[in-house]
Image 1 (tube, helix red, strand yellow):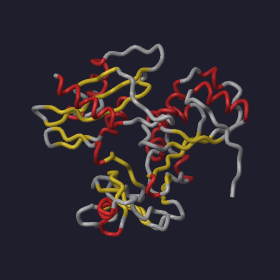
Image 2 (cartoon, helix red, strand yellow):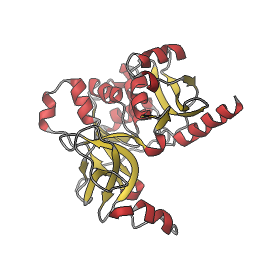
Image 3 (cartoon, rainbow, N blue to C red):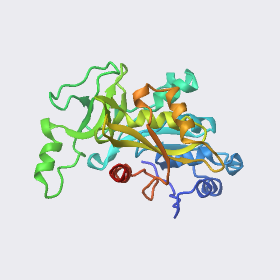
Length: 299
C-alpha cells in the first residue's frame, strides 16, 4: 500500500501544475493527453526548480506519439493506462519492459503508446471479433474490439437490462474500442467504434489523423471527426487549437498531413475553433460531431 499527499487545483493550467510540482515536490500526476501537451508547450523557465523525477499517467484518450516523445524530452516519465467506468476506471497499463530502455526515443514512444497488461483484479483482457467472439491473431493488423471480464467489471447498467445484455454478449464486456494485438501481445488502440470515419468505403482512424496533426509544431490541441459528405458519405474534419504565438493556415496543416498520410485520410477541412473539454481536459468529441453535422446541414 502506498500513501501520499494530494495537491488539488481549481483550474487546469500548465503554470499552476508546474508551480505546484515545484512548491510541494509533487512527483506523480495524472492527466488527459491535452493536459500533458500543455506542459510540453509551456515555456522552459516555468519548469525551472523542479528537481525531482516526475512521473505521470495519461488516460482518457489515446495519447499522441508526439506528446509522449515531448514529455520524454523534458524529462517527464509518462505511463499510458486504459479503461472505462464500467471496468473500474484504469484496467490496463502499458508496462514498460527493461529492454525498451535501450531502444531509440522514437521506438520507446511507439512501445509506450500501447496497452495490453491487465490490472491484477481483472480476470481477462483481449481483442475479439465481436461477431464470432474469437480472439484476433497477434499480427498487428487484424482489428477487433477490446473486451474485459473479471469481478471488478460492472454487473450491468442501472435499470437497463437490454443495454446490459448487449454489453455482455458472449460473456465478455464489450468496450466499443477497436484495437489490434501486436506480436508481443500488447494492444494498439485504433479508435472508438463510433469515432471511425468511413469515407468511400475506407475506414479512417481519427486517432491516426490526430497523431499526425500533433506532429506539427503549431498544434496545441486537435480533434478529428466525421463530416457528412454527399459524395464520400463521410470525410475527416479537423478542429485545431494552436500554441500561443504560433501561426499556421489550414492549407499548411493539410499539406503536412498529405506528407504523412494516405490521401483519403487527409482532412478535407481544418477549422480553428475552441475544442470543448471536460473540467479535467478530456475532449468531448460528441459535441464536435454535432457541430460538424449542423455546419453541413447549413451548407
